[in-house]
Length: 337
Image (cartoon, rainbow, N blue to C red; front, side, top):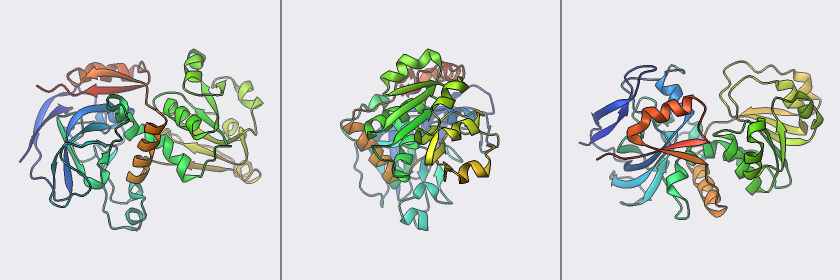
């Protein structure tokens, strides 16, 4: 039996408090990880506040975990005690369906998110299936690597899935926690990158790798680049002028939605048909895509821009993130005595 200490909320919009639970015996294919760092993602806020109706209380958030393997189930494979690993949004899948067997585990009907129906990484330990416990390349800065495991693979995966070429022109709409990583990955991929952002972020966005910057509130500027992009990743989670964004695409272009926009997206079929354009979306990636993304990030020295808080100051971090002050991701440093 393992007693795990963490920071839990006991209901929507309540502060996180110290909480201890008994994790029970370690599953035969599971891995126990001692948490060193854990990213604080907007999805954690949604779960804390039960915005999606999935939350069960008491609840420990946290799904961007970096730590060391401290226990292995009898049938866990490919890992060793003491190895530094990461656990992202998902912690398990069925491992026998078509999606799992074809390497698309994140699309498994039985995929098990790390913080849905189980406790997450705002804790001294976390457990996950060995397939979803990803070894970290030695070259990565582990103190900032946590957000790569969720936000990073979310924006990297479309580059692989849709065969984006180095000669393509890629736009990123919304430069925040997801968008700044999308810029870095697309630039390192070899693409010409256009960022859509606020005026206050223009210089910083160029530092992230944008070749071109368009103010997201300037409809005339957006109209001027009509027909120029092969892909536009939308990382913002608020309603937009979708028809204007669709017009930025070249023939065969793709409008790819990554932000959790809750309202319907109004698009006329004829505007897709005439330019043979596509609209798509994707969740986080599979274990193999996470591993590929981590290797790519290590090779190109790509890291999220993060702010650190001790995990004992999780409520202060929560307020900072909710206020929109984070530049651009928050990482909690485990400081359990």
